[in-house]
Image 1 (spheres, one colour):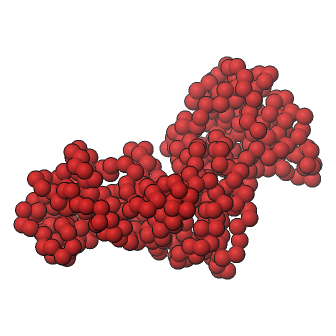
Image 2 (cartoon, rainbow, N blue to C red):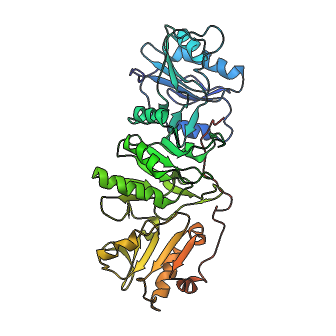
Image 3 (cartoon, one colour):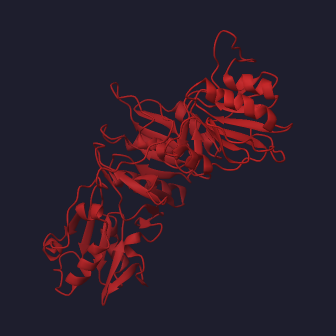
Length: 433
């Protein structure tokens, strides 16, 4: 149930050391020395008629600041959302199904308004989502407390995804995660999932769920078991590999696209926000120790066709289009593919689609020059160097050239760097405990 709509939630209370107001109806509580919580809170969607307080309680004075401020701000018809871990968890022997003793329930009786609060740890997910694995609860002023979903804002796909997560078993383990569903092999000795895992930091999409396939260190799951799960979901889902070959996920998407008669999309790695807040795909190695950003982030798998990029990758930015490729120089185009970049003559016929479908594990970038069985002509050398110069250092370090002798042409410009990009890591969610 969504919070009730209402007029302006009331006057803004002056900031204090514990409670700092970012806008009318939006405040941060507790310590936030780097300002990360404030930045994440500012990305939350506006809820008319709701006063939102988000942060971490470091001591009694933080909670006192909330209980002192809210009674003057919560007018009739308004509600409160507490983005505070455990604020909706029942405490002590007084808890009953109809009347609990959680901090949120006590506050709802004090202000005589609905209070939404997490029943357990809260994750502030990049992009502006609050996720609670145990669920949000809505406490009313009358003392009742009822479930209120796992995610805020609540996406349309949440009931379907969470139902599938609860009923998946056997050889496959399914976890409900902020962006959707995570499926991987079921093993007896697998380590418990940590909220610091980057799979919990995938920005959710409101209209479709992300299905993450695989888990580093476990090996690929049985495609038949994954297919059974996908058959129970809306075909709009976005598939992404996690420590498993990209070809496994592309093959699944292509098969389902043919069976359902509609395209499916595949992310080439975990969807994540880069330092400039752009959505990219981070491909994770099978052992989980390293990752990289492939040139192509999304692929569209249409019935009976080779997978193609959803949008032009940054590596071809500014190049004029030429048929299915981008003109790199006289007589040569570059075509982005699922496995890498194809530097070829223009007007290559569809009978080369088998080449476009060549499998890839997603850990390397392949640059194919010319047509199979034909040597690369000398005039391609400056064009190849120009193409390599468009790659990031991380991508150049993962590049394989086909045929092998092409590497001699670009050895001077291929300056290897560690694939992890100077110690960077994929950002995890906040408030993970």
